Image (cartoon, rainbow over all chains, first blue to last red; front, side, top):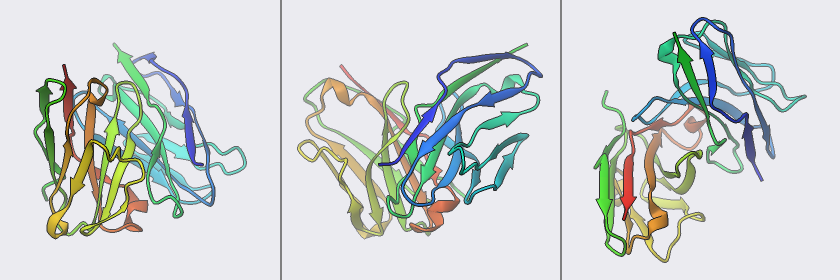
Length: 112
Length: 116
């Protein structure tokens, strides 16, 4: 079956530090890959996506590249801000499953 | 454009009591999903609708959970009777159709259920 593995949190960084949150997946077929963000007290928001190998998704300074050879979709940002503090979820979607499969989430806390 | 609207935002009930959650998806979105998110975990699908038809309810605990989507628009998720282990955030999401879901779902803010 499909599964997503994320690095455990919390991840605590100082403002302007470089961020990497690791995500690897197992899937049948050719999944689309997503990063969702959940701010405190809010629902999930789509941050970025990639639909095929070597695609790079980007949004709000965040980037992730779909690496089929390593089955990975690591999230990166060059300079985090306090406002980036949230829980980040990696997810995949395949046509055969027709449902988003999420990782367990990684909490990011950015301090001044 | 209004997003996915869920109500109530919070609900506290005693165990064995019934509870219902309501979701209004984005206008024109044919596919509707109910997810459950346990504390510290990622969301897990409970049921998926294509218009008014439940096409995937394999993860829905049918002994106590039920859902409906009359007229293929709003949806209601019900638990009767609730158990302590049902405490979670219940998320509704929608997409234009199953294939447009590859562009990402739109999630509501969720209903946080606490069973005491």
